[in-house]
Length: 182
Figure 1 (cartoon, rainbow, N blue to C red):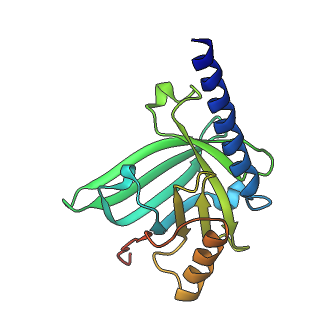
Figure 2 (cartoon, rainbow, N blue to C red):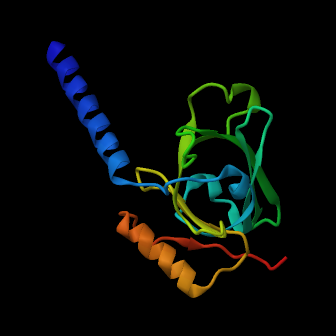
């Protein structure tokens, strides 16, 4: 039994060290000015993920501040069944004043205070005009390219994809989001 406990301890230490090493190897932008970041962002592309599996087009994320100074996240999309899907969450800044790393929770509002069920949201690349952003997290499973407009140029998309690849992301499975012009 002691051997099993010892092996489990070594396994968890190694796992934690690996996760920590991934954290260090992924840099974020230097700073995000929250007042400039707030507002509506259109999803341009994303890695496949289960929580967006019903989304087929018109995917947006809207960010506003709440009374606690945290960011309210409202994600919307159109499903294949012509339904509009909506998820409301809350993002907590974990590295003020840089504001480049967040923990996001989509738990029911009464449970969001608990530090469980929160996902990483790191701002990896952001242009000076706050028009295009690359968002990801240290395990490199989740990735979004977002923009202030429903479409971006092929050059800008390629720039952000190449940047993601340099960070170690696989981009061959990215879903290009269909956005109807508003």
